[in-house]
Length: 91
Image 1 (cartoon, rainbow, N blue to C red):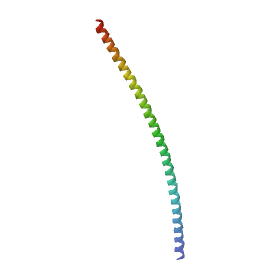
Image 2: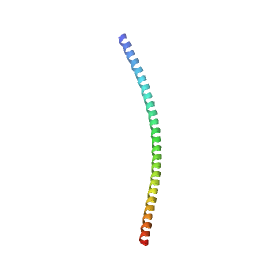
Image 3: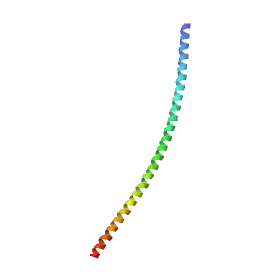
Image 4: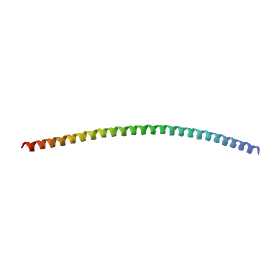
């Protein structure tokens, strides 16, 4: 009986140690996951900021391109109108 009590005591001690170790591992894992979430959140914020900057740059470039195209078309149309009007009057 005494031997059985010692064995049960060792089993209970081992179980207690395992519970403590599992608790520490769970705490470490939770801390690591929280840290990773924080890093990921920071990276996502940085990515959003870069995407917004790129959108702004693209919008500005598009407006410049559109402005140049419209001014070129107007110039070409005016040149054609004046040239066409000048020939018909001179002939």
